[in-house]
Length: 384
Image (cartoon, rainbow, N blue to C red; front, side, top):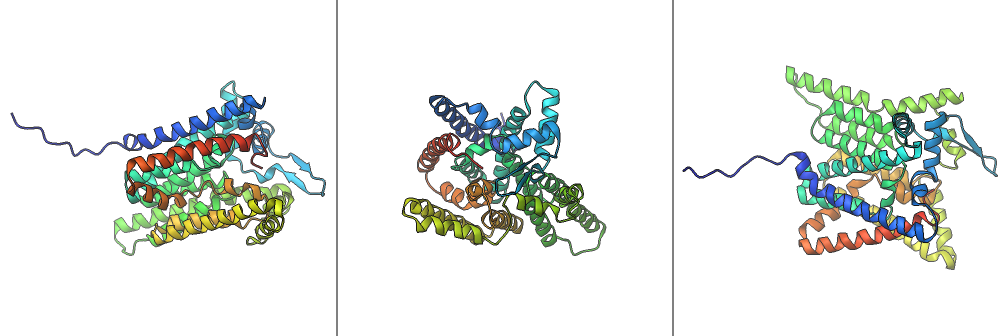
């Protein structure tokens, strides 16, 4: 009998990603279980915290009634629902129309499903660059972030990260039309969608073919189509807001200004941190903010030293820049950094090089801390 040859067939993409997705599910299940127990002990509703608080209320109201709602603040400003991009409310409206769930509950379902899509996308990007073990640890590190509970809220971070990760993966595999289409959808999800647009453009421009035969002309056409598709979501919504409000192409900036938000290069955030450091009762919080910012910048420098592809470098730089240099909602900055998953690739690579037991211990302890912090956070001030 002829001995059987060892199979050289590579496992499917789903099977390769399965350990990472199972680990992600375990971390998120732990986080939700701790939140439920903590909330029950405080006589609050975990369901409400996840589906009907803070931004989730705005998304659900848009899904139910469309745009046009605003709240006037004591200082004379106006918080307009036009600040919220439409893709999540569209999905909530669709889900509520075909199911018995409320708009907020649909938002929770979308967020949970999108968080798994995001985890898979993160795995796919990391695996392609550094192998399956780095992909596994990149997903687990994303799951155990202190603000990881947001991945399970009726917010748009998970949906955006899923679209961004798969768009970046499409860039790395040369599927330019897919990359542009996903970037356009990301641009309909959050203002930081411009980071995905910039990444697609950077990746396409670096990879443009130089020849003129039929194959290379087709490649030109695909890249140009991807470049054209990428900004349509962001640009379309911003222009619609300007027309809807009668304030012109830059009307969306006026909407953000009403929320006390804008881009000032980080000046307001620096003043906020300095104010914390100047007062003894808040000095520890101020120091923690300084350490957090330095950690983010160190991780970005590590991404550069790692020579990540230009699309990832541009994307991460844009997400970090927009998060740290925004002039308002300083408590939101950790949440705004949630989509910056390439920052996790250097520590994921470091974990992959360590022994399995040490890496597992780090991830397990981080998961417990993340679960406890998430429950404490949502039952306290919560994410603005």
